[in-house]
Image (tube, rainbow, N blue to C red; front, side, top):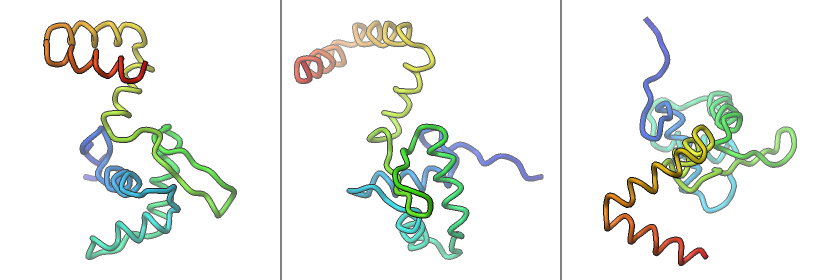
Length: 125
Protein backbone atom coordinates (compact mmCIF):
# COMPACT_ATOMS: atom_id res chain seq x y z
CA UNK A 1 0.00 0.00 0.00
CA UNK A 2 1.44 3.35 -0.99
CA UNK A 3 1.73 6.00 1.66
CA UNK A 4 3.53 9.18 2.42
CA UNK A 5 7.31 9.08 2.06
CA UNK A 6 9.14 8.62 5.34
CA UNK A 7 10.87 11.71 6.64
CA UNK A 8 14.62 11.82 6.17
CA UNK A 9 17.08 14.15 7.85
CA UNK A 10 15.83 17.59 8.81
CA UNK A 11 12.19 16.49 8.72
CA UNK A 12 12.19 16.35 4.92
CA UNK A 13 10.93 13.52 2.75
CA UNK A 14 13.78 11.73 0.93
CA UNK A 15 13.43 13.64 -2.36
CA UNK A 16 13.02 16.93 -0.49
CA UNK A 17 16.30 16.17 1.30
CA UNK A 18 18.06 15.54 -2.00
CA UNK A 19 16.71 18.78 -3.44
CA UNK A 20 17.76 20.75 -0.36
CA UNK A 21 21.26 19.26 -0.46
CA UNK A 22 21.57 20.33 -4.09
CA UNK A 23 20.37 23.84 -3.26
CA UNK A 24 22.64 24.15 -0.21
CA UNK A 25 25.67 22.99 -2.20
CA UNK A 26 25.13 25.68 -4.85
CA UNK A 27 26.86 29.03 -4.48
CA UNK A 28 24.10 30.99 -6.23
CA UNK A 29 20.32 30.69 -6.56
CA UNK A 30 19.42 27.70 -8.73
CA UNK A 31 16.84 26.87 -11.34
CA UNK A 32 14.82 23.67 -11.41
CA UNK A 33 16.99 22.51 -14.33
CA UNK A 34 20.22 22.93 -12.33
CA UNK A 35 18.82 20.91 -9.43
CA UNK A 36 17.39 18.29 -11.79
CA UNK A 37 20.76 17.85 -13.50
CA UNK A 38 22.55 17.56 -10.13
CA UNK A 39 20.09 14.94 -8.88
CA UNK A 40 20.07 12.94 -12.11
CA UNK A 41 23.87 12.83 -12.20
CA UNK A 42 23.65 10.51 -9.16
CA UNK A 43 20.71 8.35 -10.26
CA UNK A 44 20.31 5.36 -12.51
CA UNK A 45 16.64 6.25 -13.13
CA UNK A 46 16.32 9.94 -13.98
CA UNK A 47 13.72 12.14 -12.36
CA UNK A 48 11.28 14.11 -14.49
CA UNK A 49 11.61 17.89 -14.63
CA UNK A 50 8.03 18.27 -13.38
CA UNK A 51 8.76 16.08 -10.35
CA UNK A 52 11.63 18.30 -9.22
CA UNK A 53 9.64 21.43 -10.04
CA UNK A 54 6.74 20.21 -7.88
CA UNK A 55 9.05 19.41 -4.95
CA UNK A 56 10.75 22.80 -5.19
CA UNK A 57 7.39 24.61 -5.39
CA UNK A 58 6.20 22.74 -2.30
CA UNK A 59 9.41 23.61 -0.44
CA UNK A 60 8.86 27.25 -1.40
CA UNK A 61 5.27 27.06 -0.11
CA UNK A 62 6.64 25.69 3.20
CA UNK A 63 9.02 28.65 3.42
CA UNK A 64 12.13 26.47 3.13
CA UNK A 65 13.04 27.84 -0.30
CA UNK A 66 12.50 31.34 -1.60
CA UNK A 67 11.60 31.79 -5.24
CA UNK A 68 12.58 34.78 -7.38
CA UNK A 69 11.92 35.70 -10.96
CA UNK A 70 8.99 35.39 -13.26
CA UNK A 71 6.99 32.57 -14.75
CA UNK A 72 9.25 29.97 -16.43
CA UNK A 73 12.42 31.65 -15.20
CA UNK A 74 12.30 31.15 -11.44
CA UNK A 75 15.41 30.61 -9.37
CA UNK A 76 15.37 29.27 -5.84
CA UNK A 77 17.54 29.61 -2.76
CA UNK A 78 17.36 28.20 0.74
CA UNK A 79 15.92 30.41 3.46
CA UNK A 80 18.35 28.97 6.03
CA UNK A 81 21.95 27.72 5.75
CA UNK A 82 21.12 24.12 6.73
CA UNK A 83 18.49 21.82 8.23
CA UNK A 84 19.35 22.94 11.76
CA UNK A 85 18.65 26.54 10.81
CA UNK A 86 15.26 25.58 9.43
CA UNK A 87 14.46 23.54 12.54
CA UNK A 88 15.38 26.38 14.90
CA UNK A 89 13.37 28.89 12.89
CA UNK A 90 10.33 26.58 12.92
CA UNK A 91 10.56 25.99 16.68
CA UNK A 92 10.84 29.71 17.37
CA UNK A 93 7.95 30.52 15.02
CA UNK A 94 5.80 27.84 16.64
CA UNK A 95 6.71 28.33 20.29
CA UNK A 96 8.15 31.86 20.42
CA UNK A 97 9.61 33.15 23.68
CA UNK A 98 8.99 29.84 25.46
CA UNK A 99 11.32 28.07 23.03
CA UNK A 100 14.02 30.70 23.51
CA UNK A 101 13.68 30.43 27.31
CA UNK A 102 14.01 26.64 27.18
CA UNK A 103 17.03 26.93 24.90
CA UNK A 104 18.73 29.27 27.36
CA UNK A 105 17.90 26.93 30.25
CA UNK A 106 19.46 24.05 28.34
CA UNK A 107 22.54 26.15 27.59
CA UNK A 108 22.89 27.03 31.28
CA UNK A 109 22.95 23.32 32.12
CA UNK A 110 26.02 22.74 29.93
CA UNK A 111 28.99 25.07 30.58
CA UNK A 112 30.52 24.41 27.14
CA UNK A 113 27.27 25.30 25.37
CA UNK A 114 26.85 28.37 27.54
CA UNK A 115 30.38 29.56 26.68
CA UNK A 116 29.68 29.04 22.99
CA UNK A 117 26.38 30.91 23.23
CA UNK A 118 28.04 33.84 25.01
CA UNK A 119 30.81 33.94 22.40
CA UNK A 120 28.24 33.97 19.59
CA UNK A 121 26.29 36.79 21.24
CA UNK A 122 29.44 38.89 21.66
CA UNK A 123 30.54 38.13 18.09
CA UNK A 124 27.23 39.26 16.60
CA UNK A 125 26.67 42.13 19.04
